Length: 209
Image (cartoon, rainbow, N blue to C red; front, side, top):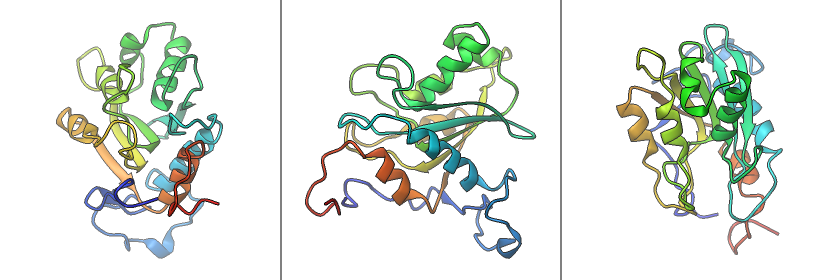
């Protein structure tokens, strides 16, 4: 796979320990299996396990997502591409499942969620759907508490969305303008993209066999 097709995100990344501006802070003191709030890699790996359940198709990325509630990071739900009926994305699958749990429609879901929900997703939420469906960025922005604040306060991603289907994804800007913090975790890009593109035709130079 070429860099042009899967652009690297340099200015958007954080360390795998979740410490802004320094990848060396407490590095030797961290246990790689630590489930602390700053070990973002642990939760991205959990989302990646969900992504592996998604059926490989040439028209989709296999993505996994996980919603957590602070302060103790209680798991709310997981989701993956095509988990729910229709051409559903991972984040959308999470929202559909939670709406069912709370017996509400997706538009009202934000009113039922705990404060400060965190979304982990193996790939940044889409900002545009090639078949006219509502984007995951718009779905996130529509989830609001009764006081009008965003229900999801932080989105943590494993990789940026490749330009394969809908071009450059500018969803990060929309999320940040709404006050949602967006972080990218380094270190799992190769694994995530391998899973995400499992159903895609391999081209010369992509490393396929």
